[in-house]
Length: 320
Length: 298
Image (cartoon, rainbow over all chains, first blue to last red; front, top):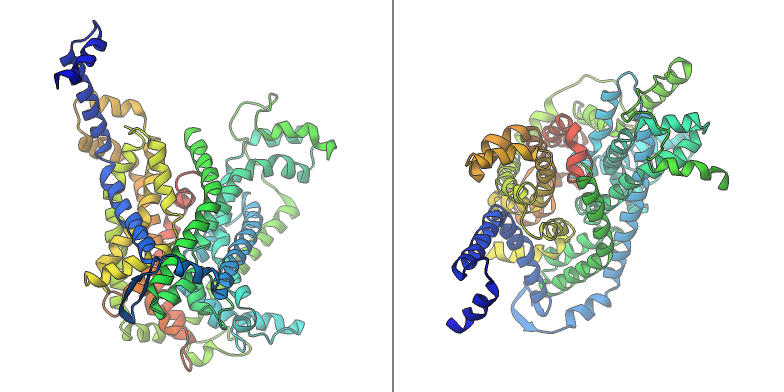
């Protein structure tokens, strides 16, 4: 022990004795723990509930385990992964996930911008109109899917076909002829208010002075929107696209209720397909491998996106 | 495009010729143009929300009025569908939803408030890394963790147990709450906290007597956001519960492929299952943006 403490004594220098030095370091450590203590319960809880199951998923993915054959837990190495990548239904579900997420986010963002521009002025009943427009986002998503399936897009009595019938197109069985489109329509209706709220917050944080200056300089309304408002909104639009993607990519309820992934597997996305393999096929090993593949894909896409979100968040909070 | 170039610097918001900061009062559009725009906004707003209004209307119909061609607009409203839904044992589902939502929200606040404090007012080292970790868990697809959770719940005999949902919803909402609460903590003046600490107040006392009163609206907003997400959660609810612990969204799965006339009853059930959280959202709408953006946008 004395050998170990000797160098410390020498480097401690004239200012403080070894005891003072040690107690200072102990105090620093105690201070560190005092600061950390309030954080630990939340951190440990989150680690336990999100990271442990993921580690278990990785382990399961290396075994051939089907709940219907309980004694079949052999280690199979990469066999499950090879099966996943040669599974055309998995690839179809992956493509559907991308298609549904991208189209839903883009369309609801465009509609959201339009609605936000309409609401960004004083008029009679503005609060009421805003309250009405945010309602689709608050309705139970499961109820929203049933509403579109049985009331709006129903082939015989559906309102959409009723509205379209004067134009000679009122005879479509939307959920089976255009299953992906039906899912996207329900999702867009649900997510447009979210985009509208974000863009509206952006519009209302815009300084009036800049617009005033633009007006003085003789810019037209369209020029002002293109060169002043839109660049200002960029941060809010990016945020909406990123957050919307995080949530929409995990969509399960709308597909479960509206199409059950069908007809066949025409409209199943990754969450729904993995659900089927887990809870209807009881194929734990392969479902786990799919889960790991999805996470790997998400990490690749998200590393960029996450950095971007993070920068946006930090800028927003540090700016206050 | 080059013709517009001179205007571009103004986009940065650093226009030197700009008058005193602060938002100039919005000019009120008057005259026919303004009225037309108002009417247009109302029309578009009503058209957008019309499916929800139609759902509400259908809930008060008889079954034979609910699915007709052309659609029935005028009818004698009835509450029979609502009592039919209640008669189909809907209340236990609502009860489970309430338990899972309220208890998980309470737990989120109990865990999230101290954590947000340790990431803002009195920050730990590597605060950025911790924040990054919390937000990254929101990007972990649920399907990547559901298999072990299902297996573990089965082995611990916790399938079809509402407390399993409570734990999962707490984990689901905690990252959002930490980010959101942190943004409210950052708005509390540092001087007040320092003063309390100099006078010897401990962490709990600072949280309880100094910060809580200032942050009450922010905490309420965070709680409301967590309630919306928990109430609407479906994936875990449908896969981990059966008859005992099923929540309101699970009740609605009974209507996926019903035979015969059921649209009016479906509407009544959808209205009853949605209404509590729609009202909560209306109340919280001023804070909704901040919650949904996890504190990034006010």
